[in-house]
Image (cartoon, rainbow, N blue to C red; front, side):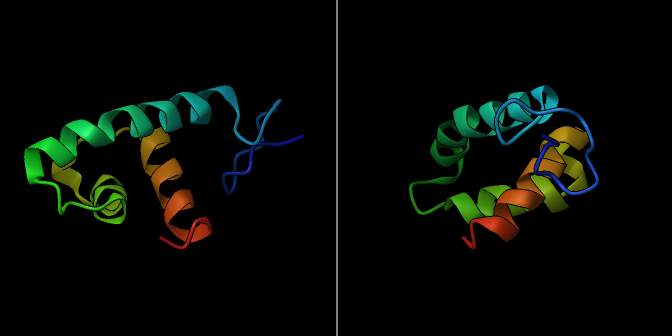
Length: 76
């Protein structure tokens, strides 16, 4: 089975390949820190959008790809 991220052909034992799974885990674990910094009104959708689109954030390609996937597939 291939990773569910578009254009990724790496093998995946779950929905994501190992690299995208690690990126998703990092995204999930860091949201609370961002919410603390930006306030309780800061949403997961805003967080994912910043990761995917803001060059100043400095997110790596794996994180950007997972954030884009989550924004489109979860319909946040």
